[in-house]
Length: 146
Image (cartoon, rainbow, N blue to C red):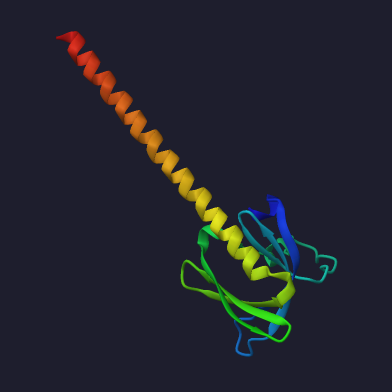
């Protein structure tokens, strides 16, 4: 869960809705080292009786599912950008130019991908060392029994 991660940046962005009218809706955004959380900006009303539904309103865009952040254009006081997800889904955002959200999301995405690549290399090296040790051990035990 991204909610447990430390916030790198917080603020309000507008997200274009998927519906027919494609309205811009304000979302409180929390950028972490693992991804982007989208939270409804208004404090929720007292929850109705039954299972809590507030958690379902938070949308997580995890960097592991994110491909790129495309800067579409700067128009007036806004910068418009698109988050492209691994499955091809595109999510359009806009925010004040001076806040640099698109740059900050891109930076965190690149850092996340770099961390994953380093972990993959370490994991591969550990597997190789393990195989070398196993192979060496088998070789030695075979020569000892001869």
